[in-house]
Image (tube, rainbow, N blue to C red; front, side, top):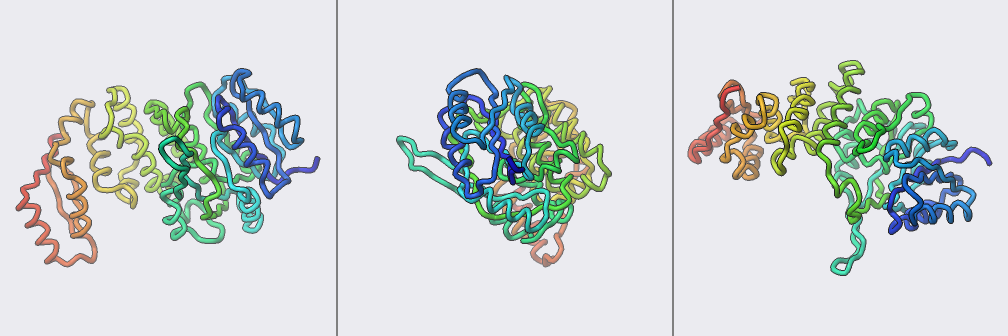
Length: 389
């Protein structure tokens, strides 16, 4: 058999309800020159029988057994055996549109790139109460405006670091894995392994392309998925590993992509302090990660809002979780959405330094508007008491 254009990896574990829809969508691709590597992660459950059926009926299908090694180990086992020019990794409870691989492969060859990323649909299957629903991912229109139609590097357009990792919406040159040694974090309980994988593939790629068409259907209704089973400990560990990676690189790497990737870290780690209980150990590990971030990265971030910057600063300055909680006054958060809207409308930034609040006029804002804004704040008697470090 000649070298296939694309090797499709599908790690499989207890998804018998969705597996046939997933594999059928891959085998029905308009690009026929592919190999499909099904990785058996578990025991001989119904999934194994389904995999065997496809292996017997289609010569493009192969099965690899990687018992109970976890997602990362399963994908790594397949990466060691791929023979295609490019690699696609598809989640076994999702499915793809018929032209996805053909269009992405054509884009990769046309622009001679290492990575092609595409948009995707958030997908909800039909249930007794709701109809089947597809919704374009939140950031598609934003990236369609920001990214060029040609090839680029992550250092030219680091905005790609601030959106959902969505490793399954990418096509990757096989040489990127062989030449750069990129692999997934392994080990049981090693969830959210897409954090470091996304960072490494984009940083190590010389050339990237964006295809703003939604080809991928990302299922939101599988209660067994990692999305629906959030593990704060795992995601803190993954960002610890991400910072290890950045510190192994020249400083300008994180200096460029950090102001964007920090937004993803915020959404997945320290912003949870506002919505869920965390332990002292989790708080200290978050703080340890955030202490590794240079102040310039935070200052230069165009994605972190003022509330997130404030929250980050308070974590770093706090000795422990109890002290952190005592420093965040209810008045700061009780009507924060309204206040931050006002801040943005009048063009005011605030900074918390040494127990003082500094109001600073943003560039291009009339000083009369600034004065009125200060009067408005004083009239509402909004208090910003930040306590002692």
